[in-house]
Image (cartoon, rainbow, N blue to C red):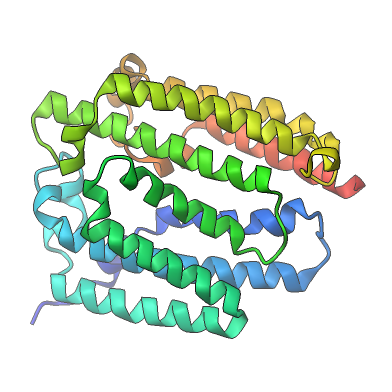
Length: 300
């Protein structure tokens, strides 16, 4: 019987990826109902549900990708690929935490349980088939962010939801760019879909998505007159979004990526969470955006 390593099992659940689930707080934050504790409590439970269900998907995905991960320059050190967590342990844990997540969501609302179930079905489809289909793989990734944004149980403007979807597609394209570059350099193809992508095509998508995301956010920030934010003072946050997009594009640039790889071996656009958590420029842009939003909300 394979010995259970709790630390390795937790790492296999990818807790660093849980930062994506903070997006469920967007709805209560942008409704500026800062003193409505029931909304925040429901959002917190929704975040926990997404953490559980997303970790269950990561475990399933790593089991399915175990052979490809063992050929990757740093994915081979993941607990499942390295053998620290057995396939049986990973699958049993995946089933257990998914059941817990769905049960918790059912106690909150039908809407939340529906969103969690939809997320799970899309991601299972992604693991089994959709990740091999060009463009469809990008939309599956973006759908996860949209569903998180919708889980806050507060109305959000269509402009904001569009911004979330476009930014998620932008990050997915940046991820595929990094993976395609690694494939061309090493000859190791960790994803079948990479054979269907090219740099010129991904560059066109990157330009379209970054421009569209900024414009849709600007329309949302313009205020109630455009069915956007509660106040047009949110336009003050535009510079922080622009800096964040520019900074991310700089970090994903091939020449800059080569320079930084010597210092930060795992901090590339192939791992968006490592950039969002580790890069000082991105953190400054996010914190500036967050504090300006709080200041604007305190006066609404």
